[in-house]
Length: 445
Image 1 (tube, rainbow, N blue to C red):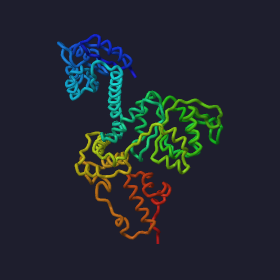
Image 2: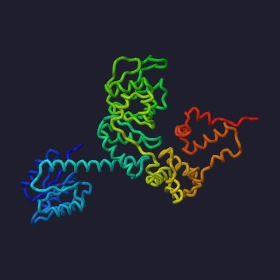
Image 3: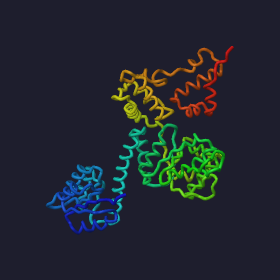
Image 4: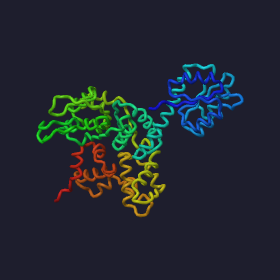
C-alpha cells in the first residue's frame, strides 16, 4: 500500500511544523498557510488521503472553507478540524457539515495520531468496499442490503491478508464468487486462482488431484503430474465443499497448512508451496467434527477468518436488483425485458431455497421462452408463476406409493430450480436415492 498523502492547513508555521512531525510517520505531509493555498494544492497536487485544517485563520478564511473545498473535490477524503478551546461551537458546526472529527488546541500528541490513523483507515475501507461492490456486481452478488454490505466489509478486510478463510452458506449463495473477490483484492491477485469441487472428485482420486503423483505410483500413472497445490503456488486454492473430503486427505491438508509443504503420491521428498487456502461448505463442520467425520484441528486451521453468506430469503430487498441484473445479463442481443410489478412482488415473496443461483436460472429460463419483451407470471414456473399445486393434485388419480413418491420428488426438484443436492436435502435422502425416486415407474398390470 502506498504511503498516505496528508495536507495540513494552518496559518501558524509552528503549528504546521509540529503537525508535520507528528503525522510524518503516517505518510507524506504537505502544508498550506491559508484556504486559498489549500485549494490550489487540492487542485494541482491532489488527491490527498487526509486533510487537517485549523478552524480560525485570521485574515485568511476559516476551516469551513477548506472543508467545503475538500468535500467538493475529494468527497471520500476525511477532514479533521483543529480548533481553540474557545471555538468549540465552530468545531461542532464542522462536524455537522461533514468533518470526520475535531481536535482542540493545545495539541494532545497521542490524540492527533490516533484520530488521524482512524480517519485514514475509514477512507481505505470506503474505497475497498466501493471497489469490491463493483467487482462482485459483475457476478451474482448484487445488492445493498445490510447483510450483504457486512459481507463486503469482511471481504475487504480479509483480502489484505493471506490467512485461510472459511466461507459458509447454503447452496447457491455465491461462495465461489466471494472467494474470487478475495483473490482479486489480495496481494496474490497476480497468481492463479484454482477452484476445486471436492464433492465432485472421488476420494481415491482426491489425493493425486491436490498433491500430484510420481510416475508409476499407481495403476494408470504413466507420467509424473503436478497437483493443484503446486498449480496454485503464489495464488489461491479454493476448496469448495470441504466437508466432503475424506480422513486421509484431511490429514494431508492439515500438514500443507501447518508446514507449507506437500508430498506427491509415490514420493517421499516434500515440496514447498506458497498457497492461500479458501474453503467453503454448506455443511455444519462442527457437527461433522462431533460425528467424527471431520478433524477438529483442520477446522481450526481453516476457520481463521469466517465469512457467512446470508441466504436470499434473508435479504429480500436485494431481489429486485438481482432480477434486473440477470434480465440484462441474459437478454438475447437487445434491451432487457420489462418485469411486471406483479412478477417482481411474487419473486420477492418467494423463499428461493436454491438462493441466487436458482433465481438466475429462473430468470434465464423466463427470458429464453419469452417473445413479448414483458415478463409476466406466465413466464415463470410454479410456485412462482401460478398458485402451487397441492399434494392432492399430485395424488388425485390414486397412484401407487412408488409413483406418488416419484411425482413428489419431481415436484420438489422443480421447486428448487433443478438443484438435485438441495432437492435431496429437502427430501431427507441422498442423491442416489433421489435418482431412484425419479426413475420409479407405475407398475404395469
